[in-house]
Amino acid sequence: MGAVVELLRSNDPVLVSFAASLLKDAKIEHAVADSNMSVIDGSINAVQTRVLVAEGEYDNARALLQDAGVTIEAD
Image: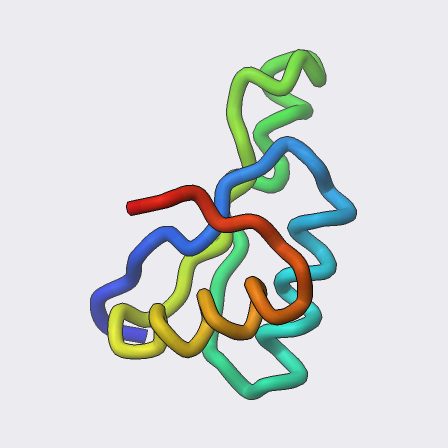
């Protein structure tokens, strides 16, 4: 994938799954990181799940999620 940037960070597994599904359907290469960390941290949500995209796809991915109503925090 080359250089990657964080697109989204959340403790909400439904939101992360929704975002990943949108990216997959749009054929935007992405990765979900830290999704299994809740097992280690005892499900206290100390570690948020991150959705990562290729640096060159960030603007397209961000626009896609925002168009779908997902709030992306400012850079």
